[in-house]
Length: 300
Image (tube, rainbow, N blue to C red):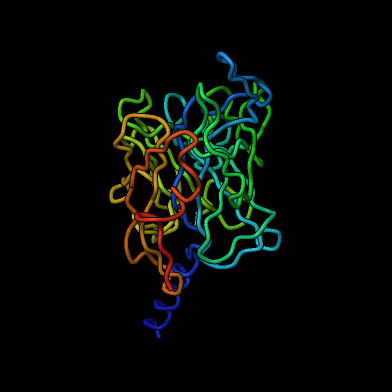
C-alpha cells in the first residue's frame, strides 16, 4: 500500500513539470543599443530611421498545439548583475531585475517556433547601414517596448528594464556583467516567488549573484540541465549550476539551444547545447535561426 502511494506521488510531481513550451534560442546582444527608446531616431550620413523599441528577443517552441487565449502562459527574464541579484522574490522580483511577458493571444502549432521580446522584429539589431533583416513574418506572440525614462512598470505585472540594459543580459566573455542571466516559462500568468516554471535556462560566464538557496531564489523546473524534485530547488544550488556560454565575444550572435525533446515522454532525449550563430546584416534571414543543423528537434 505504501509503495503504491509513493508511485502516485512521484508521478504527480514529474507530471506537473511537463513542458508545453520549451526555450530554443535567444538574441541577447544585437547590433547597436539593445533597447533604444521607441520613437527615437538613428541618423548617420544618408542613413536615417526610427526605432520601434528594443531589439532583443527569445525563440520558443510549442510541444503541443496552443491557443493562448484559452491557455495562457508567461515568460520571465532575469537580468542579473550589480544590485540585480537573486532574492526571496525570485522570478517575481520585478524592478530592473526580472521582466514578465503574458502570452494571452495568438496560437502556436505543435513543433513550431514562436517569439517573445522587444517590438522591432528584426533579426540582429541595427547599424550604420540600416536595420537588419525584418522577421516580422515570424509568429510573434508578445512584444513590449521595455525601455523607458520613467519608473513605471512596463512588463505584464512586473518589470521596468529602465535604461539601455534591456530585458536580457549580454552573455559573452569579457562583458562587465559576468553573472548568469535567466529565462523562464510559466503556465498561467500568475508568477509568485515559489511558482515552478515549466522550462528555464541560464546563460553567462559564472553563477555569480544569480545563486539562490533552497526556496529562496530562482526556482527551477526539472528539465535537461536542472532537477527540482522537491519543488523548492533554486539556481546555484549544488547540481543546479549549469549555464550556457557564448564563445564569440561579439554582438549579433543568436544562441541556438539545439537539443531533442520527446513530447510523449515529456523529457529531453538529447540535452540542449549552445550553438553560436553569428548573423550578418540584411543577408541573415529567418531560416538562419529556424532551419538547418543545431535547431531544437521535437519528437514524435
